[in-house]
Length: 104
Length: 365
Image: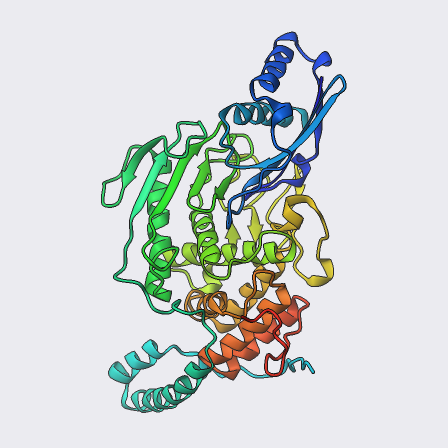
């Protein structure tokens, strides 16, 4: 499974930390692999809507773009803060921390 | 046919002294000062009567609905994303032991006070709307945002960012997004989005300046001073005085804000560079505030506020539209010399104001 994660916007956007990162779960620690693949299942990623728009008048929210490829299945979603689905939020939060470690 | 202004008009200080100062001079000044102040007031009242007819303020925006209503509610999310986790401090309660809660509560208070005391605006919606905020949002969350109904603040990751309540201008910035949504409703993408962001930076900075009692020439004009964690090479997130200079760090590079239209950044990132190109109108405001002098929130702030209320400011407004209306409202409020200052400042950032008389305002209601 490969997961591509990109985060942009927010009150304090830092362009140097906004580049997309790609995680190949075959290339990471088994524990992290299990965790990520479980989160994908738990949040029913492939059933999530492709686009979730922010509330009217909202500002400074972050926008997350996530693509998951799992065998023949590929799905991309784009969503913004605040994320109301707790399982999706957990997945995004985990990706955010991992992406931060992968950028300079 | 549109006409650009000449940029050689002179500023006459007597045209831009607000009436309350003139009234104070008229009652407490020397005999000569009183005579001049009274003459100026008499002339101003005549001009203001004429200008009231020309005012284009949105219906109901200058009348407050009921008495001032400041009702602050600060929730703590305990590092989850539950916006209404625990109500920690509500209006009138004493300080909590949580510094972020107290910073949010106090920041909401001084922001409310700026809007009420200076612009007679009764909270975000001008109708006493609750000021709701959530602190400790998310896990090491490096952000603050306005979700359309309330403010949200993260704790920062501790490596690059501190908690987002640490800078009072951030709180004023977020609350102002609510004011913009309740008034002009400027869209949040591309150039309108950068204008929306700039309006929040302007009033965020005014909240800070007023809370510190600083004149325009005493202020640092920084957004997010104190937000960066120790060791990071930056004085703040953005500089309104010198866009593009606030930080320059080996890890994340230099802040990408332009200070002139010739350096406008075309990008799809960050909703079309809303936090990038905001540097242009930010600097225009700074130049106006410095040229007028005194407290930025008085004259310069009022010109911006009245422009936000102007019914001709469309949801898709460009910098040019906003510049035109600020010049119009400067003249309406304070006369030709104030207008000239506004026109000159926009010119310095690469925007030549167009006179509104005779313009086809296609977006006007």
